[in-house]
Image (cartoon, rainbow, N blue to C red; front, side):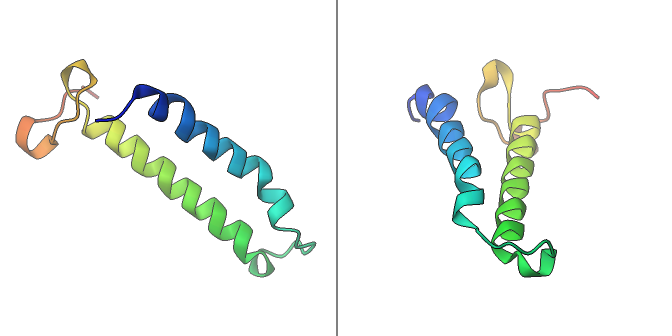
Length: 79
């Protein structure tokens, strides 16, 4: 599909750089959440992205860490 370095180094690295630069991009001095639209939106996007990755890693991973569809092949983990 694509080189493993993209999934293991590039994507997490870009995510970390964006999180590191977030305070410099959003220079709003207010402490009220309703005044911090950019920071609230950024946090929401990262939490949703994290949740999607957890769901994909839990339910869409088959034997050998291959991508599978749980409704076709079943779920390959035990609770």
